[in-house]
Image (cartoon, rainbow over all chains, first blue to last red):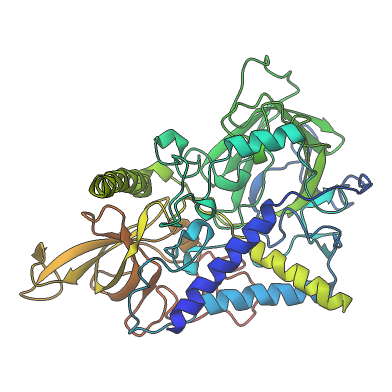
Length: 370
Length: 159
């Protein structure tokens, strides 16, 4: 039964890691003094108006996570970086290796896989394109995207935010109230299609892929395309085909006008495009934030093949202080494909049908017991 | 020692990465209904967010005549995979998986048991090779890191 080992173990690891990811960690560091990225001396492409031409398609796949273990160094040694990249390649090799063609069906009661694999094991790794390299800035591999606070962790949430978060958070598969069915989410998570996550509903990419802030989703569909005119900049995200239009040199919309990706206005500071986003609706709630979320993104073309992307995010109703992250967006010749997510989203129907049938079966069990 | 500590911390980083997906599978499939499907491909639905591989499974009281097994009855099953976009970038198209290809699939059936649908927990050829990975290579995207690796389609670094 070796196939069970090769299949189950990675998901168990992922589940445990996801818990670490979500654990709030204290902050005691000083604000980072990392200088803003400067455009290299090398010639960068420019538009007719003289501003840098940021247009192109970029591949955001990276092994570098948003946060790193508290206090560990931001920059990896080359030796460690190479080792870790080899480990990631070895893991892909392992997941791609042949298994027993005469295997039996997986175990009754689930295979124990955690996280999105939901005790049923998800699907094969060959569908995944999670990246194979760490983000490199100034020739050095980064251990986290987050640069400030300098300990590499998102700042603590305010006490009010913690309470709000605990109240509003939809239980995940890992935290199911259903002890008899650990892959099934509790808390009425299937009661209404609108209670399902935006990604599952094909409305937004998961993991803040479309942003702002734009983050890698560490899974697949990592491409973004920028289209630029004098008056506006479009940021198109492959996952889930989200398009954000940045209005240049414009005022923010009235506070009463809120948007799922916020209201983005831009201006140039020297050769850096600065995008200011406010006016978030309550639909997206990045990491438990409120509509008071305020994000400043900085796009700098550091060389003809690379954009530096940096963002600073603040929401006094959510975090005790602002935080900043940065990573490079390497240009790619790849095509960004349409991700027509509604096209074949059988999963949504299967999920809701499954929940209704479970209700019926649970009711039958209850009436038998009475 | 410090180096060991760092490595274990950094090893965790590697594991942290893929924590999400388009949807959680636990709500869609029933952990108490494991299935092992041995049959032949009839159709590939090359759609987002998830591709679906259709296979016919010979069964004495099957719902319809098999396409690829003469004088036999089959049930058709649908098996859920991931996004076709990833495979397209490796040069794999909807025509790469031919109708009639024999597959072995293990997974779990949809929670609505009236549906012949399952997740493709493992989709392999009869000899156990993973689907699409049978010819050569590791299944990792062609990222240009390995100079001995031949470009596959429009794979990264494979121009």
